[in-house]
Length: 193
Image (cartoon, rainbow, N blue to C red):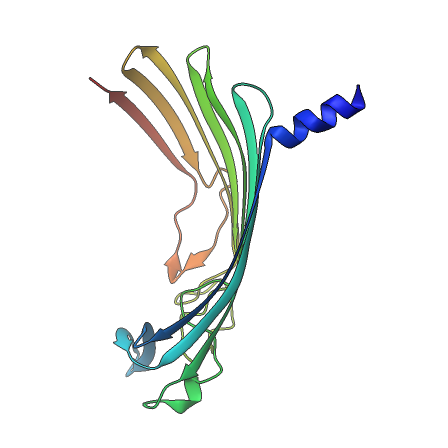
């Protein structure tokens, strides 16, 4: 019996792996500076960069209507050349987290109900091209953060569905340049014909 269970587990489980390496030229990045108490953000292009990474994932069908998934991404980014500003060379690319993790449970059409619970972690992101924004929880920074979101829906009749969702269920306080919204509630009515 355990042998059959193991074979069934393998059939219902889908692992994925991706390895990547990209070379960029004339890539866009955000330049930040302050002058006379005013903060400026300007998009610039130029220079060369490299991105290396790996993505791992797994999805398992628990029952005919319930599945679970988890994935992670690790990215090693580096500005390899910037003739306009050589001190950026060797720094991480702005607005790209080094690590990201996601996991969740999905319920698909169980007696008309649908639902999901999803967790997401995003690692530290530099908004400054010199990677000087090392503090967290202040305006202008990009904090590492974890959020949990949930959604439940019900198909009232064929083509008509109502749903309710909560983003940032744990009401985490974090910054993504400016303060991110706290817990948010959403309602939705969808009619497909």
